Structures are given as structure tokens and as C-alpha cells.
Length: 485
Ligand code: NAD
Image 1: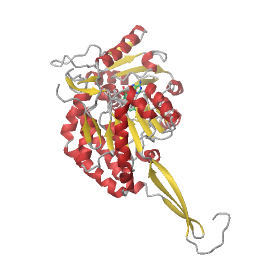
Image 2: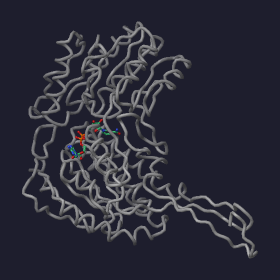
Image 3: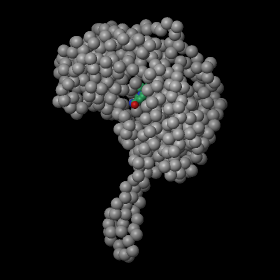
Image 4: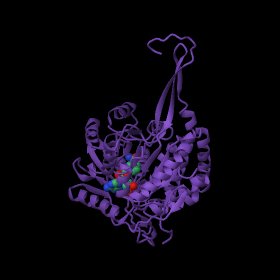
């Protein structure tokens, strides 16, 4: 085992869990055992919440310009440790070096946004009648929680942690039990950056801890990122306990490809979107709506896909179970009459026989009711559905329950505008395969891809992580009182 047993982190210290129940942490790259992670108890969560609660008053009481100094240093430490963090993300998640490096770089960008927070939360003040002023201020909520998925072990924790903490909250982080190592390193870097003990805490575990977080009376807000099934459970349970919650769920992202699209640009973007991070991105292209005759573009997508090679420029999928699930979808589509143009089943990498790889897969002549057309596959697979018109394609996209992203490939501004207006998704791309809004724009889908009122990053997250105080003051010496004062 390369690393020791994963520890919890509270009061600024790493603590061995008392749980007797550990899960293996396995590298998808080669199947080697990296570590074991404890399934902590609700009592251990309670200790972490106490730590966060004790740290709350001093941290919230510090001016934001003081709090943000920690994050300038944290940003520097992310950059200084870029190679080491890249290696760790790649090792525990299975990403290629370039993908893991991009994840660290994105974490830096997220931290930079948090560092700009003092400029964004200065509040408002207005003289509303003679000598009477109204002002607004953003106040932290207190102890908040962040529950994160396996597919971005460092970036998704950095979607929530820097913003929530700069805004004066203290946090309990619940890493994915499949990839708990990057969060440990994050805690070390925050300590090195000078974050006071107790402001950031980690509790490892699975379902039991997530449920205990939703129920805990001293946790004010819960953010969740993961599958739709669990997002719904977390949203329902934590709002039932009268907490604020934003829960991001799964996705089935549609790409509209029109005959006038630039073939090379479309083929490279579609392929990069479906195969990047082995298709394990909530923004990955999953269904392609081929509007009219786009056969030459499909041929080019197949050529591009064949250049994506497992173990070289394609990483591993997270587990053996994930590989079996993805390959099962391909087989089912084939049995239902779809045509597998590029087949990634049975992929292996020499010298890494214990790794869990699926090659790029292009499935054509998929019909809208097939499972590869309706369900999230979360692997490097694209399902091509042929349609006669753009309206027909939009009808298919609108009917799917998710709503994270949709993209259109065309040279027609009018057609692009039509998709921007009518696609039922929170994030739209025009000639972009992965339309992630970058800071300061916020990230969040629609429909079953997000529950709750706010997005999770960017300016929208300010409303989620704070409560507004509205103060009215009168310094007008006149004694008279009117209906407004
Ligand atoms: P997951 O839902 O299985 O797990 C997410 C978190 O929930 C983990 O911390 C896990 O320990 C916990 N969990 C799992 N089962 C639970 C249960 N029954 N009760 C309570 N907690 C439970 O998701 P995953 O497999 O880690 O991540 C992949 C999913 O996340 C995909 O569906 C992907 O689309 C989604 N995702 C969405 C976004 C987004 O922005 N919408 C971003 C990243 C990932």
C-alpha cells in the first residue's frame, strides 16, 4: 500500500478514525492498492462539526481582506506543488497527466476568483429618505458542508471550499471514498497557507456520513455534487432538516451537429468532449443529434476517435464496475440494432493489465428510446441519433430529464441562436464541446442536473454561502417621524 490509511481532519490535526470498516482505494491506472479509507461514524462527524463551530466566531469576525490573504498563499502553494498534485490526482482518479494538470490549474483559477471576493461583496448603501440610509451586508452562514464526487478529486472541492471560506464560513468536506487522497493534501496546503485550525475539516465515509451531515443541527448549509439519484436524496433530506442546499446531479449532454458545421473543428471538439477524462465529466458530450446529412462529419469523428488511445491520451475509468457498466451499455445498444462504428470494449494497456480502460466508442443509428440515448453512461461513448430537422432534435433534447449542458455546431448564427433559446439546459455551447463557464461566470445546470436555487460557483455562489443583513439608520437630527422612518 503506497499511502497510509486515510485520516479525518479536524481541529487542525489529522485524526485516525475509530471505525473498523475500511474500503480499499485502488488506482484505476493499474489496479494497485493505494490506501484504505475509513467509513467514519456520526460521532466522528460530530467532533468535526464541533471543531468547525469553535473556529467559526473568530474566522467570521476577521475582515474579509484578512481572510483572503490565506487564499493568496494557498493559490501560490497549489502552483508550487502543481506536479505533485497532478501526479496524485492522476494516480487516484485515472486521468492522464494533462487532464490531471488541467484540474490543478482550474483549482488555481477557482482560488483566484475567491481572492476577488472582497471586490464583489462590498454591499450597497443608499439614502432612502432625508437622513435615512439603508445598507446591505453579506454575513456568513456558520458551519457548512461540501459533499463531492469521484470525477474531480481536487477541482470540485475547490468549487466550494475557497468561496465558502473567504466569505467567512467554516466547512466540513466529505470526499468521495473512491478518491480521498487529494483532499488530504488540500488540508495540508491550507494549514501551510496559515488557515486557522478548525476552519476546514474533513470527514471520510459514505452514505451514513452523508445522511448524518444532512441531519446535523449545527450544519447550516449543504452543497452536493454527484449523481442525480443521490442529489435528490441529499436535497430532500437536508431541506427537510431546514437547511439551505444546492445539489448538482448527473447529466446527459446533447450536441446538435448541423450540415453547415466546420467538419474539422466539429470532429475534434466532439471527440475531445466525449473522451476527455475518459468521458467521466458531467459536461461530456454523450448524445449527438445529427441533423440532416452530416455523414462526412461522422466519418471524421470516427477518424479522430481512433487517434485516442487508452493509456496514452485516454485515461482509465474509475473502477472495474464502471468498465463493466459502460461496456454493458454498448452491448445493449448493439443488440437493439444500433451500429458500433468505433468499439472501445475490451481495451487493455500493456504493462497495466490491472487497469480499467474503455476505448473511445462511437455508436450510430441510436434511436431515442435506447438506454444509450436516455441514460448517463459516464464513459468515452457517444450515441448518434439521426434527425431530419432541428426542431425534431430539440424535441429529443428537451425530453431528457437532465439539463446540464447542450452544444450546437454550425456556421449559422440563426440556427445557433435558436438552440441557445430552445435547448433545456443550464450551460450552452456554440461550437464548443465542453461549455464550462469560467470564472467569474457561475456553474450549474437545470432540471434533474441541479436542485436548489443557486449555481455552485462564481457570483451565484455568493448568495448561497451568505445571508444578507439589511440595516436602516437615521442620523437626521430632526425629531419628526413619517411613515418611512
Ligand atoms: P455519487 O452520487 O455516487 O457520489 C457522490 C457523493 O455521494 C460521494 O461523496 C458518495 O460518498 C456519496 N454517496 C454515494 N451514494 C450515496 C447514498 N446512497 N446516500 C448518500 N450519499 C451517497 O457520484 P459519483 O459516482 O461519485 O460521481 C459521478 C456523478 O457525479 C455523475 O452522475 C456525474 O454526472 C455527477 N457530477 C455532476 C456534476 C455537476 O456539476 N452536475 C459534477 C461532477 C460530477
